[in-house]
Amino acid sequence: MQKTTKDNIFNKKVGFVSLGCDKNRVDLENIVFLVSNAGFKTTQNLAEANIIIINTCSFIESARVESIETILNAANLKTNNCEKIIVTGCLNQMNYSDLETSLPEVDCFVKVANNNEIVKTIFNLYDVPIPETNTNTCNFARVLSTPKHYAYLKISEGCNNFCSYCTIPFIRGRFSSTPLETLISEAKHLAEIGVKELILVGQDVTKYGFDLYNEYKLTTLIQELSKIEQIKWIRLLYCYPELVNDSLINEIKTNPKVVKYIDLPLQHINSNILKQMNRKTDKSRVLEVVNNLKTNIPSIAIRSTFILGFPGETKENFTEVLEFLTEQKLTNVGFFAYSREEGTRAYNFPNQINTNTKKARVKKAYLTQQKIAETNNLSLVNTVLDVIIDEEDNEMFVGRSYLSAPDVDPVVYIYKTNQNTNKIKVGEIKKIKITQVAGYDLEGELYESTK
Image 1 (tube, helix red, strand yellow):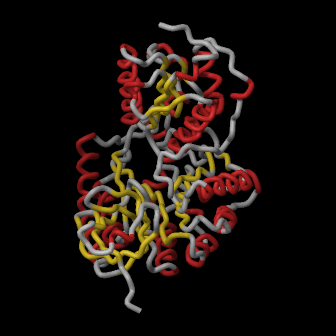
Image 2 (tube, helix red, strand yellow; image 1 turned 90 degrees about the horizontal axis):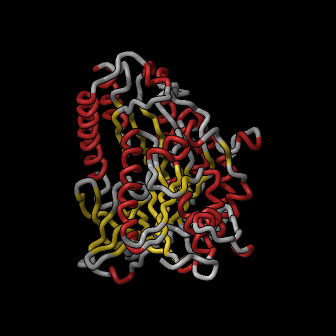
Image 3 (cartoon, helix red, strand yellow; image 1 turned 45 degrees about the horizontal axis):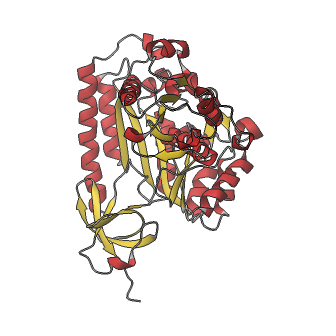
């Protein structure tokens, strides 16, 4: 094999894999920018990559298994073109020394805090001195992995909540907000490259700014982002209910750029279970927040997640969740079986629920929510919604209304057999008349007013 030198190192092709959440996605987008900006070639085909960078997830056991399987699959490519495997992301943040022993196939494990040194890492692996011109460590420039018209804006890192089931504070550290001016600069950069929809993410976006400014600054951030002309939609994910106050609700209600959508990770509705989870809320507060949102913003789309089978969850506690779903008719809900994670307080809780019971409860909850979603969808037939067009193939366009975040919520199909679809382009926001329900999703056609 030809010796790698400073003259030929940039002939190396770098491939990337990102696992886990949209916050992880943002981290990898920054890594891709740093690598490509330094002068390396990038490829989406791992089989032709000389260097594979894997951004891992380790939130729960199944995520850790997926991360390790992905690393081992990449290692199999070392018999072909692959020369180096670099692993970053959440898997690295716990039991770091054990990983180096158990996964000798990996050439370098990079801590998340050191992602900005990824180019230096590559040079070091090939024992080549890094040129001074390749030391750029821009904090926010990214190569988008999403369609160019939407992007995630990660406004904070880490978490201080220490929910009894959650490993995030141990993996990602304490809550840390990104300074307001940095986020505005990043958003302006994203707008300049074509982004129209900003999706605000963080482990708990409602806490934004308190660590820096001694007051919550989410509404201030939203207002500043709204001043960027090219940004048309701002979407809020991961708003913890205890901090969804009147100010935030009013901002969602009155700001035309904020889509009428909110992600409330409730996790449960029984007050005792919430207390055991170390959530900072109870059933009465959850009901108050949901009622305030619906009263002030009747068209609001509320997405949530629930953990079922938490230690000590009785049949009655589970029934309480089903009753809440039936009464409140949330727009979109995800359900997860409790994962017993070593190192968390809940790991040693008594009355652990067996796997089959947890799976059965998740299945029943999904069936309950499916009926609610069908009813919600039927109510949309013959209505006209603004839809952002995400993709196109030979048969159809696929888009999302304000009701839906990417990847997790229903989409709207606009078939090309309908008239006037030649007026639709990916990245545009179009008025679409909903014509029918297509399972979990919707179908529609371009709406053109006769007025």
